[in-house]
Amino acid sequence: MSYDYLLLTIFLAIALIFPLVPLGLAWLWARTLSPAKPGHDKQATYECGLESEKPVQIQFQAHYYLYALVFLVFDVETVFLLPFAAMGFVNIPVVGFLSIMLFLLLLVESLVWAWAKGILEWK
Amino acid sequence: MNTALNLLHLLTPESILVETILVVLIAGLFKATAQKRNMLLSLTLIGGVTAGAMLIFQPHYGNIANGMAVLDPLTRFIKVVVLGLSLITAVYAVQSNIRQHFAEYLALILFTAIGMMLLAGTENLLMIFIALEMVSIPLYLLAGFLKQSSASAEASLKYFLVGGVSAAFLLFGISLIYGTTGATSLRDLAQSAPAVTRDPLFLAGLVMAIVGFGFKVAAVPFHLWAPDVYEGAPTSSAALIASGSKVAGFLILAKFLAIGLAGAAGSAASSQLQPGWLPLLAVIAAISIVVGNLAALSQSNVKRILAYSAIAQSGYMLLGLSATGGTALISVLFYVVVYALTALGAFGVVLHVEQRRGGSQLHHFEGLHQSAPGLALCMGVFMISLAGIPPLAGFFGKFYLFAGALGSASQGGNLGLLWVVAIAITFNAVSLYYYLIVLKHVFVTPATHPAEPVTRRNAATFVTGLLAVSVFAIGLYPGVLLDPLRAAAQAANRKPVTAAPVQPK
Image 1 (cartoon, rainbow over the protein chains, first blue to last red):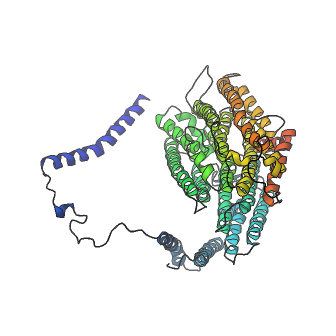
Image 2 (cartoon, rainbow over the protein chains, first blue to last red; image 1 turned 30 degrees about the vertical axis):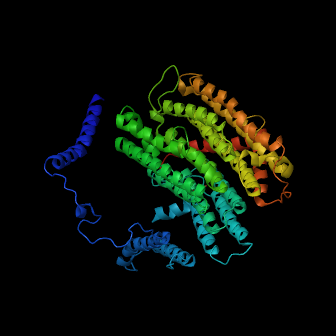
Image 3 (cartoon, rainbow over the protein chains, first blue to last red; image 1 turned 135 degrees about the vertical axis):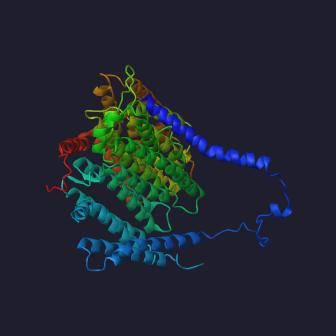
C-alpha cells in the first residue's frame, strides 16, 4: 500500500519537474543572455509583416459558424461512406446495407432541414 | 449481424422516438399556421405514446454486449416514467413563450428522452457516460432556447460549462476505475472491485465519479449552477431538468453504486466509520439538506425556491442511497418519481403565472386563488407534498426513505445513520417555512395586480391538474406506485445473470 503512494509521489514529482524545468531554463536564458531592446518595429503586432490597415477586431457573423458546422457534418460523412463504397455494393449484408441507407436518409433530411432553415444562404 | 438485430429489437422504443424526431423536424418546415404548434405537439405525443406502448409490450429481459443495453422490469418502469415526464414537458412547451423554432424545441425534448431511456437501460460505464452526455447536450440547448433573453443565454452557458467540467470529472473517474479493475460492465466491476478497495487510485476514481454525478444531480457543493439555470431557462426546459433528468440521474447513480461498487461501500455509521462511498454520500447528503433548505429561505423568485428545494431534495435522495440493502433502492426510486411528478406540476403552475402575469417572483403569485382557483389548489398540493405532510405522496416518500435509512442493516446494526436522519428531519421542518411562504402568497395575500380574464382551460393546466390528482392519489394509496416498483425490482433481481441476448416472454 505504501508502495502505491510512493509511485504516486514520484509521478507527482515528475509531473511538476517536467513543465517547471523548461520554463525555468527559458526564464534564465531570457534573463542572462538576451537583453531587452524594445523598439517600434519589435512592438508592432506583426513584427515581420505588413502594418494592418483596418482595425483587426472585427466581428464574425454567427452565421459563419452554422455554415462551418454543416460543412463539418458533411465532411465527416465521407469517413462513413468510404468503407461502403470500398466494399462494393455486392458484399454487404442486408443489415449493413439497411443501416447505411438509414444513415444516408438522416443526411438527406439534415440537408433538407438546413436548406429550408436558410443556413445555406450567405446573408 | 444478430447483435445488430437484437439491439434494434431491444431499442425499438428509442428507434420510434428517433423516427418521431425526423417527422417532427420535417413537419416543422412547413408554413407556419395557427394550428401548427398543436399539430407538432400531436405528432410528438403520437410518437411518444407509440414508443411507450412498444416499451410495455417488449420482452421482459434483455442484455446485449455485456450490459451495454439491458432490459428488465425495473428498467422498463423507469423508462416509461422518464418518457411520460418528457411528454408532459412537451405539453407545457406549447403554452410557453417559445415562438421560434418550435419543432426543434420538441425534437430536443425527444432527444433528451432518448438519452434518459438509454441511461436507464444500461449497465456499462462507457454507455453510462455516452447516455449522460446525450441527456446533457440537448438540455444545454433547451436551457438557452430563448435566444433573445440574456438570462436564458446565461443559464445555458453556466449549465454548459459546469456540465462540461462534471463530464470531465466523471470520465476521469471512470478511467481510473477501469484502470484499476479492468472492467467497464457494472456486473464485472462488482466481481473485481472488492480486491482493490484500498487502492488509492481506485478511491480517487471513485471520488471523481461521485463528484461528476454530484454535479448532475445538483448536490452541494456542486450545486451552484442550479438556481441560475432554473431561473433563466424557459420554464418548460427547467421542468425537464428538474424532473426527468433527475429520475434518470438517480437511477444510474444507484445502479453504479449498488450494483457496481457494492463491495467498496464502507460504512457511514457514526460508531464504525470505514472508507468507501457510503460515508462520502452521507456527508454530501447532509450538507445538501442543510445548505439547500437554508438558502431557499431567502429567495424571492419561485423558480429559485424550487431550485434550492431541488438541491435539498437531492440531499434526501442521496441519504436514501446511502442506506443500502433491503428495500432501500425501491424507497429511493419511489421518492424520486414522486418528487419528479410534484416538481413538474409546480413548474406547470409557475408557467401559467409567468404567461399571465409576466414573471415568477413571489408577488406575481398574489391572489392566484381568485383568478385561477384550480391551479392555486394544485400549487397547494404540490408545495405541501414537497414539504412532506400527510396525506400527500411526498410524506410517504420521506417516510420510506427515513425508515430505510434507520433500519439499514449494513450500517452496523440499527440507527447507524441516525445522525444524518436527525439533520434531515430537523431541516425538513425548516423547509416548511418557504413552501408555506409560497402558499401564503397564493392564498392569503390579496391581489395587487389588475384583474385578469378568467383562465381558459388548456392542455397544460389540464396536465398540471392531472399531476396534482396523481400526487394526491399516490398519497392516499402509496401502493399504486410502490407495488409496481416492488414487483419490478423483485423481478429484476430474479433475472438470469447470463449474458443471453433478448429472450422471448
